[in-house]
Image 1 (tube, helix red, strand yellow):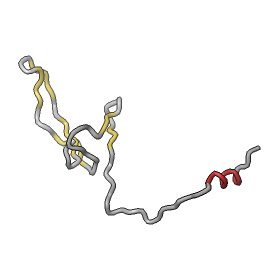
Image 2 (tube, rainbow, N blue to C red):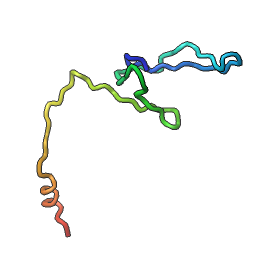
Image 3 (cartoon, rainbow, N blue to C red):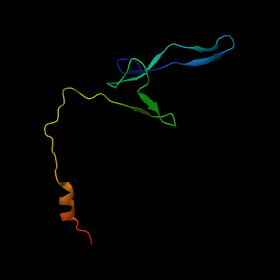
Image 4 (cartoon, helix red, strand yellow):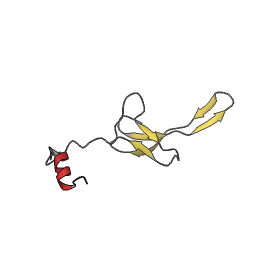
Length: 83
């Protein structure tokens, strides 16, 4: 993955001389995904058809409201009494 969030694919062929030959990179997809300079920040599903990636949070969208529920266990006991 490139620092701009682009995931690229590189075709690889076996070679008797060097072991393998890497082709030119091609963009697979691009998005605002978390990327590091070193290391991998994604994983591929066992079937090879899906990726698990961390999507960067949008800095323009902030929560309008934050609801904190205190003493929720007591409320649960009141609503669903133990028999």
